[in-house]
Amino acid sequence: MKGMTGLLLLFAMTASIRAATYEVGPGREYAELGNVPWLTLSAGDTVLIHWRQQPYASKIFLRASGTASQPVVIKGVPNPDGQLPVISGENATTAPQFAGYFSSQWTEDLGLILIDRNRRVPPADSEEYKPSHIVIESLALTGAKPGNTFTDQFGNSRNYNNFSSAIHALVVDNLTVRHCKIYDNAQGIFTNSNGNTEGYISRNTLIEYNEIWGNGNADENGKEHNVYIQSAGTIIQYNYMGRLRPGSVGANIKDRSSGTVIRYNWIEGAARMIDLVETEDAWEIIMQEPNYHDVYVYGNVLVNDMTQQPFGVNLIHFGHDNSPVEAKRGTLYFYHNTVHIKGNTDIYWYNRLFDVTTDDGKVALYNNIIHKEGTTYLELMRDKGTLTFYGNNWIQQGYTELAYQSDAAVVYEVQPQVGTDPGFVSASSHDYRLAANSSCINAAAALPEALRQDYPADRQYVLHASSGERPVIGSAADLGAFESDIASGVPAPPVRETVVPAVRLRQNYPNPFNPSTKIAYAIPDFRQNGRTQSTMAVELKIFDMRGREVAVLVQAEQKPGEYEVVFDAGDLPSGLYFYRLRAGNFSTTRRLLLLR
Image (cartoon, rainbow, N blue to C red; front, side, top):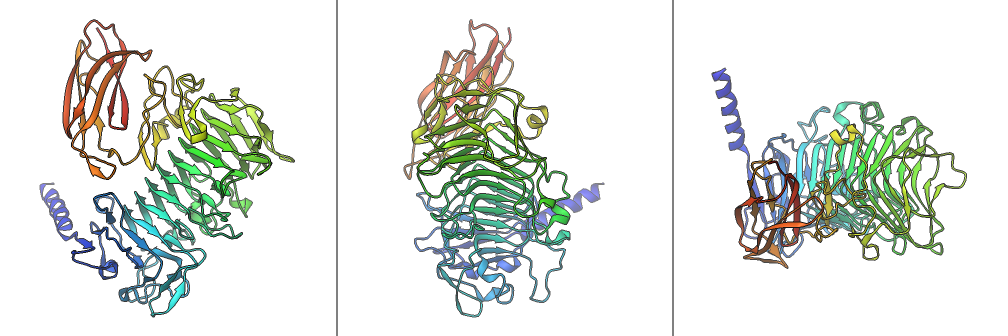
């Protein structure tokens, strides 16, 4: 056993030694992207792309396979003001090293970053080989669209395909795209599965913390989207999903996957905001996955503002586009979402929230806020299937259950709150936090045990493309996507990038306690308005169950560092209390229990 342990340690050390870092940019080892040895990247290798004033204009082909512990990382290094390095498809060039690896006819015009196995250059990858464990992060990717040209592997000037994408994966396992800005492409991100053997199936796509907007084509084709995924296992979380290009009739999220989870995103109008339909080209495998038919959509903010282009009419599609045989026939679990529809009948007569295309398709609603502003009609179900109100949803007064000639059904296991105002801070300015007098505060019902265990709504979206913890504050969780602040009735203003996510509030110790306990927290280096700040306004307070302030532990300007304070409960009675840390614009709350 000792010998085996030694061999494993030696192997890990050898793998670590082999891993290489390639730096690209002004004054670095590689001046241009095309010089990086992309085709020979291996597990643990990292390519650091440093910001420069001029966008990089080079196509990238990836066939590398990393591991879970040693992924292949393609990472941008921002400038001091936080600007991401830009890779543009406009006038991009295919580097000589890629000659022959692309199919000039079928592949080369499909994207800026192309992921596939080597199918042509000897020794070609086997049909079982898949690029895997690839991380793409902190890059701005733009310009892969039909109106732009690139220089191909033969030196010819060509246009991008209508279906081209900033990231276009023909097959990949464990692709992660995070902290990127993806805009002004025909399509933002595309992963495909196309075959009836495992070597043609993409698996485990993770898209998180990105800003994706302005993609699509201004035509009536409808096949280009901000995100289009066909994968066995898909998670889309913490993203800002802005409107598509004006004139586009694509979806914001188009998904043909199994195991789909869409949570804690900000999703704006598109012809379809979320399009959840049948797998097309890999049904023999993906359709047989045990989690194919059910989809989980929770903690999202969905904004369909019909005064701006594009907007949706049938917002969430569940079932199938073309083939009822492969249609999703399970349950769309839709919970703790905040939906805002804004528009008048002079723009469009109605908005339909769900479009279910099979008789046995189901929508299960828990703890949502569905708010409509203006005279356009709100219809819940367009076609078939059953929508059931569970939990304690809030919905706008005057809604219509079914669209004209719909064969769907609406069932009320729990009657929703019906009203004219859910109590947002300001719906007109898209501030969907709950004000102190909102009837939606502490109004959520407990989710079913299976959802609580596997898909708990324990986080919330932070503007923009970030997230934070969502503790239950008060007697129950709040309806919608945000939890209100115990003291003021509203959460701290959600912002991004003025405080980095490394601000941490730790659980007090001991807990339970009597009569004193220690609370530790960490303040990182941070930037505000593009400049590094030397101090941050920090506040640490204690509140009782009714939201009354009972102690102020910290209220001062503090430098970055680790801090610890002691809370002495003094003469306070036994019970549950809350401690809230505010640092700059960051806010988080935890619970502590006093037992005498």
